[in-house]
Amino acid sequence: MAAGTISAERIEQRIDGLLRGAIDPHVHSGPSIAARGLDHVDLLKAASEAGFAAVVTKDHDYSGVMTAALIKKHFPELTTKIYSSIVLNNVVGGFNPFAVEHTAAMGGRIVWFPTLAAENHLRWEAESGRTHPATSDKMRHAVGIPVLNADKSVRDDVKEVLDVIAKNDMVLASGHLHVSETWLVFEEAQRRGVKRLVLTHPEEIVDASMNDVQGIAAMGAYVEHSLCMFVEGSKFKFAGGPELKKFIEAAGVDQTIMCSDLGQTGTISPLEGFRRGIRLCIDLGYDDDQIRKMFSQNAARMIGIESILPSRH
Image (cartoon, rainbow, N blue to C red; front, side):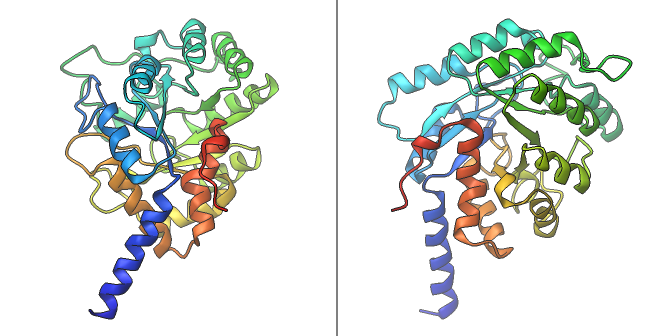
């Protein structure tokens, strides 16, 4: 057997080992109003077979906590823990504290600020010519949900939601807000007692600079990168390893989280996204301990589920 083949096999074995205990905190399995390549049960079966510790499902239009509860009950043999989240878009009423409280009461861990309904997202759509695949034929187009007043202060309805997040020790994810809005929202969130913050994919839509990434990480927030935007085989790829490494170095390994942001049709699966993402980080020179932080441990700390990680002793 050729030395190159042996080396390739060893790398695949290394990836297999690094997948055990992995956490995907941002995955778009279905059902959804947009076409999905797999549903939540398919996702959990694949993740359990690979040895993932947890996944967090995300849909732009509904809180997935009820589905997660059903799966936990009826598929106890699946070892990967499933959690869910809520995205504060039009369908749930935007900054609706009742919806956030319900998500918390049902075990939801992440509250995403507006994505498809963010005013910044709608500007980005107009400039890029891209739209969410379901908005034109299944429901009316999103209506922008503001987060700031005219004087750049945080709106009262946003503050009410921040208080619910703080009370329930949930994660606040920036969604598709412009990074200038994220700075102001995160500062207000910290003043109101929110402890868990994450900047969503600074590489696209939100217009974040490396200085923004460095500064937001310095305030204690995690910086989450969507592997679908960096790995080969993803239809969303627009950057590569050198760009990803710059982002990692800006925030630091200890504040960096990787997610697949996959589940759509016509592209690689979330699991394959993680495999290729780990391989990319290996090629970038990161060691196993650093990769485990970015693909598992940091997400566990962000969400507050450290106890489910497998022992490394």
